Length: 343
Image (cartoon, rainbow, N blue to C red; front, side):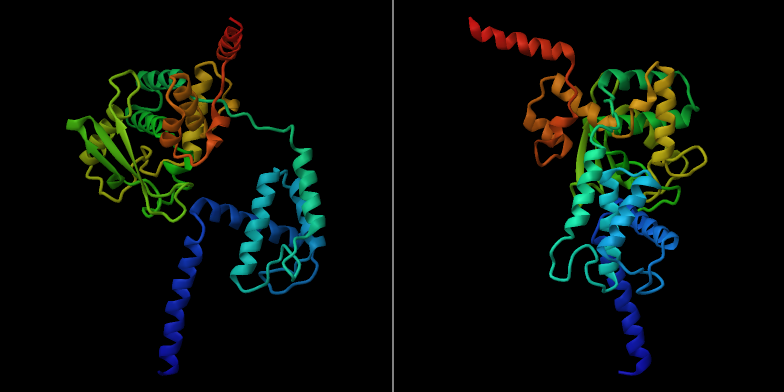
């Protein structure tokens, strides 16, 4: 084999390896990892301590401890984010062939670093970002607002479809919105990912990227007509007809703004908070995850069995219980029922 062919083969294999590294972690994790490694570079430029290479500064336990302090004091990051940033830095070093920078050569963890991280977690235990549920009642109010006119007929339909898709599918915000206005049909929601069965009054969603699907096999979710004020099928059917009427292609974004850009998380959250404020709610207490929390809360209030809630939300454990917000009235009824054992 000639030298040129050998080089060409190496280039092809390098491309394959790069793609394998990319799919070794899901898209959202990769984005946070990259942000973490950028933060470590920023820290290294401010507090240089020598270099292994131009792209991978030298690392020791002391340097990682200083990096944690930098994340706390300068970046104002939470414990969970700092842990992820450290994981992202570790991933970046291992990827290019360096040893694991977050432990001793014998594989033992850095005990001082672990202690510092525990201290960060302890110091932030009382700092909990509130995330209230968007229940069926609130979703109905949001939909009524959109039908009364908010951004315009098309974008109002997009938001109602997205809200109902998120609620009835127990979706995380990143599962149905794009991270940026740059659309990626391999991971973002496309028109072809929605299969309408209008005669049977349901449609299916092919969820290409999900936290519970690390190998990206795809998850199929089924949405049925409810014949109620809030219904996932009705707005989706209208939106599909609107998109196809303008000759949208199967691999085009399912949700777009009037300008034609994909529906991003930032756009959806911004409009959601405006609508909630108009309805008299404190928008600061809600997030994109409020749809998933609200779906679990509403399902529990409707006495849907636990195993069904787990199935609907694609939970593999009982962690969904922490999403369910129990009202004072429910607590009172439960305590009164407990007293019934005295009879």
